Image (cartoon, rainbow, N blue to C red; front, top):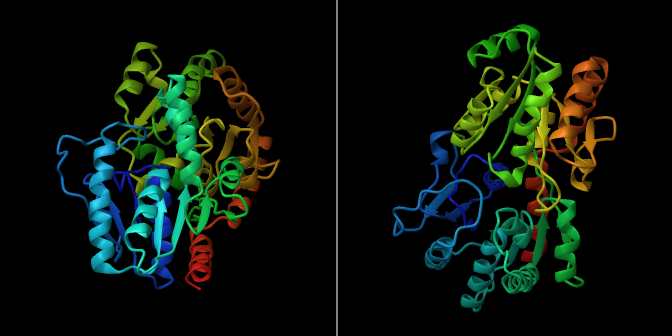
Length: 390
């Protein structure tokens, strides 16, 4: 696997890479992941034989692990090309599985270099390259945006097979691949047993959540293109009418969020968990009654956090997007046509005021999660590998 990112960081892209690799490992495959110099060692958290190989720490000052473009990644990806070449030459893998557009480009380059022994390439697209960059404030100059659109289409056509994580990205990739098949491989989650009321009380005490509060949770990257700003803006409006409510925000980078809640005098009703370890994610989600995913369709990414909410039995508020409807039945969540502070405020109040409706959504969402498991994805990837090996 080629992963042009600081693996492992405790966020969506990395969770997908890790859980796909773990599912394949459980099926008997040997996995090597080549990645950047920074990131956590997965061996500190889980028992695994997945072999993570890193580029040399030439850019020793580069410690960024949050999502988002950075021009220094051009240099990191050049080093990753060298690392990929060395590992393929010595390890001789049967399959190249490339994540993200940059990884697919590197994978295609490796196919060309090692043309004497053809190695099939699976392209794993997590979202839109241009959409992601624009959501982070890049590509504002029209000529540069046009260049990257052409580049994205070119890369999207690479690989013997392509898989995508969300339906919004299916059409974009399909248009670039002509008659080549594009396979929807949704994110997954590990289904968890529900906690009883006593266990939830103990858990809330551990995190300092006041007793008998109605708890709203957001867990994920604390950056603007994920929609966290809409949640923060909604909190004062919610507090005008509801006093016994508490918000749990888990993720990073968190300093600006801490300052935000202090400046607006809402710190008493907000608990920030940062850094949020992926392997503690379920515990934090279980603090809540409701989970919010405020991400819109602009970046064409799937929403792994919704699956995590479903697995812990939360009531869910999310955007009215095809990918979200793929996960959730119509009676399993509140789907918002527009995501902003006022729509979120209304949705939170609706769940607060109508507990029967909340309970129905929680039960239905928990049933829906049975269709999405990482083991299923592993078997689907194995099937794809066998097809292209032939």
